Picture (cartoon, rainbow, N blue to C red):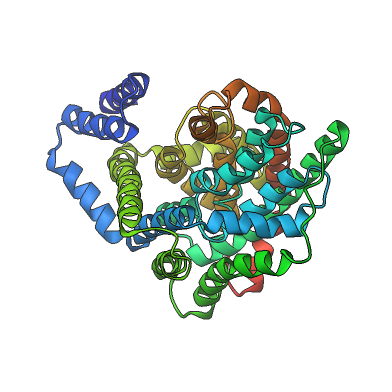
Amino acid sequence: MSNALITLLVVLVAGMLLRAPIAFAMLASGIAYLIVKGQDLGLAAEQILNGLYSGYVLLAVPLFVFAANLMNAGSISERLFQLSRVLVGHMRGGLAQVNIVVSVIFSGMSGSAIADAAGPGLVSIRQMLKKPQYSPGFAAAVVVAGATIGPIIPPSIPMVIYALVSGTSVGALFLGGVLPGLLMAALLMLGVHLIATHRNMPKDDPISASELPGIVGRGLLPLTLPVVLLTGIYSGAFTPTEAAAVAALHALILAGGVYRAFSARALFAVTLESLRSSAVITMIIASAYLLNYAFATEGIPNQLALWVSGLQLSQLQFLLLVNGVFLVLGCFIDVSVMLLVFVPMLIPTAKLLGVDLVHFGVVVVVNMMIGLVTPPFGMLLFVTNALTGIPLKDMVREGWAFTALLVLSLLLMTLFPQIVLWLPQSMGYVTH
């Protein structure tokens, strides 16, 4: 390991320990590497600009963020919640089951776990806390676990970023996430059923026949968004990147024009918040390009591939090893950092072992979503705590069973790749 690389790692770790914004810590460590290496500091700008301007698929990220924020501000979350009550509210622990179904539906619109927790999740928690049988910790734990489905069922912001660093088809990745997302939802619903039966949690209040048509009518219109997106992508009408623009426009027309759910002032606030969120993501991506240049210059990805090859691991053993590493890293490191820094180092190894990159991508993203719900730094835990005031310790205590079910779903899709690959292969995508 060269002195320059050691300097990079020291500066990066120091920045993280000092709680500096991760993008700044990464950028500072990359610049420190160039200084010690004796290279022109202009390389920093060159690597960042070349990466950003060649990454057309990155345009999808701010547009999906904007679409999700529009839907959360435009009463769409409440309408989807009421529709889901009709579908599964009659089950034991009905409101908790409703939250998971809402997460499945909303995931087909936003592609963001944070947006799911902040939108439909907040609606679900408020409804559950009206009934004494639902403890605050349980209500929050269900919401946090259900929100992990958001980036698995298409569209998905993390999968867009993975496609950028791996060169994998976004369309194939989106299709590959459908069955795993439904598997996660099914296992979570089973977990809710077992807990609700054991604790004798109530079924949801029955919906009268006179209310039913109105609830269904108000809830069906938002469901046109995933239909438009998926039909447009897989018919060739527009690319996955263009689909993000369609999603934003659809959400704007629906929430602002049809429902008239927010004013011009609210639209400005939504736009400003979307710009802030997108800027944070873009800064992390830009900084990651510089780090990836340093790692590539040092030959780290190729050395790692040769080392793993020397261990003579099978594809399954490699994937299980990756699962273990990312489940641990996910407790401490941001999703964007893992996707942009660690995953590119593993891609050559995956290719060397013949691991399908679509399968690998979905498995990696599921790993990272589980990291969002595991302490000490699970982002979804902190977001839900900030929105509701429910103590973190209560969420963790009630959430361990749901985390175990998510890990089980990860294990199943690792052991049986066709859970991921069947749909993209059936739709004509060539995976490898």
